[in-house]
Image 1: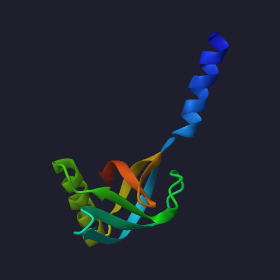
Image 2 (image 1 turned 90 degrees about the horizontal axis):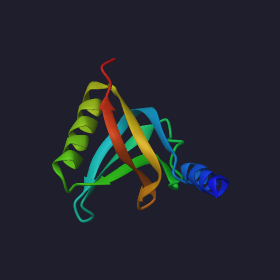
Image 3 (image 1 turned 30 degrees about the vertical axis):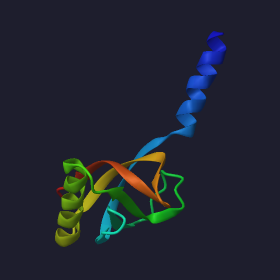
Image 4 (image 1 turned 135 degrees about the horizontal axis):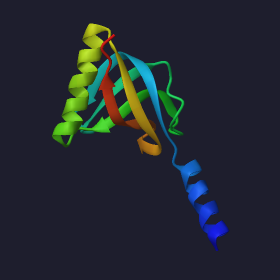
Length: 106
């Protein structure tokens, strides 16, 4: 029984992996009809299994969602990079959603 539980725990970790990558923000935008924002990133993300690798998307519902948009605009206008944590399987359409976002100082 212990072995079965251990196997299930290890397998669930494989299915939903988390990773953090550093990105340059190429473009920032919002889709009014869809109610979401997006950023085009470089390099392509390699954490999430979402189909589109060069863009991140998230809904604009909460203040935190809007704060992510502000950080993305700041990164794009200043040329600074962002450190973004992604969860495998957390997609909006065909692009990954950012989970934790940092605006890097250098």
